[in-house]
Image 1 (cartoon, rainbow, N blue to C red):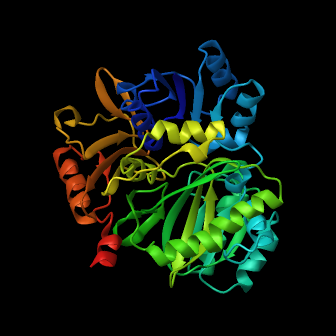
Image 2 (tube, rainbow, N blue to C red):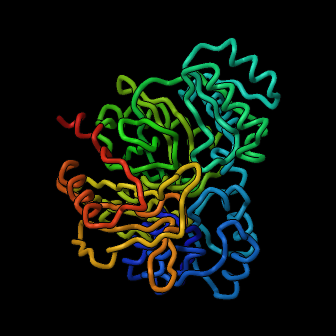
Length: 425
């Protein structure tokens, strides 16, 4: 079977790695891919948001199945376009993907369906939003309504900070049209976790939990990023908490879809805040998280291709999910200057000299090949991923790999998984 994966990040590398192990897959194309992905697929020089070119390629090459990785092509309607042309594709429609591409759409859906989340107001007027901030209690959360690569959200502890960020979004338009509207929320206390649910429009398959590290620096300091590391499972999601997530969030979400005739296919990423074992929804994403995908897929012991394929076919009830009895962690190595002004063009030394075992893998993100060298080509560059019999073992294994690398042009957190270790102690 010919498969195309759309995207170029660590998430897409993990998806390509996972499906490449299936005997059902004969050939994988990745558009546009990266240096690491090129070792297991044929990379195609088409951008992930160039829907017309992607469609042309899929039709000409007779692609049997397409998996969409990032949010941008989903929000532009790639699933609708491919289906109109009788192509099998994994992901939600453009309308359904508004759960991620519009914070207001998402919050109103939760409000209508009694799903626990922070109280909020949305604004298209800068003056009205500024006035609301001045009257609000702190801390307060400011969100650009549209897609902003994980950087359009800020928890503000001072009103001047909140107003400055509001100016960035609405007046200076640092997120372009994504900031034409803002959502302002009350602050949720607790600990974050991510929960993933596959849906074929009728059946659902719940995966396990993961915990991301959004801040750039150790101890959750510094600016927000797309994610600096993750581990799975998240100890904060114990048996009781998982049951509460299913009862308070998953069930009402999918009942809401049915009530509103919203046919959701693909994966739903539910970003949660957990307090006293009770969940509140921080956000929905309509695709796998990055870097949460890497440790999550690393733990699956059944055919990963079938999970995607049967979902797209509407036969998810036939899939038998199996997990390895392992914990996995993924540490992100980012370029210097990330997230504001990533420095690119430098080579990454010693990658080819590292010997990995079956419980270790280096997923690439912002990399390319130039003169037979691996070059930094983006903000987040590598995802060092490892499994172990417990979280401590997985963490140690991942950081041992980092010690073998020349990371002089890279930055990374030294405390990925530390919260989980505290929970386990």
